Picture 1 (cartoon, helix red, strand yellow):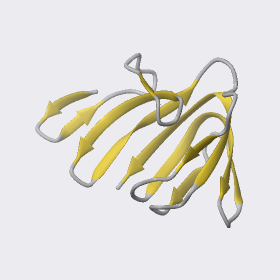
Picture 2 (picture 1 turned 90 degrees about the vertical axis):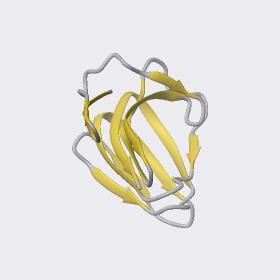
Picture 3 (picture 1 turned 180 degrees about the vertical axis):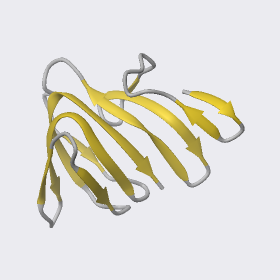
Picture 4 (picture 1 turned 60 degrees about the horizontal axis):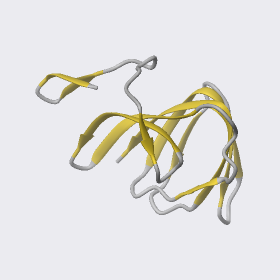
Length: 111
């Protein structure tokens, strides 16, 4: 990520700047992290995770899948089938269980 002007951030979906995110067990690339909003990408590469990822967004999460597929179980709700081009928005506090098929990459905004 690069802040090219105060409050203006620039990156690319083909970035090499990834950090492991132990909360979800995949890699994370943060585009920006401001008060009340975060944006970036998550990815899973290599083998399919041995366990599904349980995640509860702290604020509304809106995402678009860039690569791969995932099934997302919403506790007490529907199953989301995510694939490239699919947009989804999940309210804060919603318990989700992600079954990811690598390679998987998404762009997300939380806020």
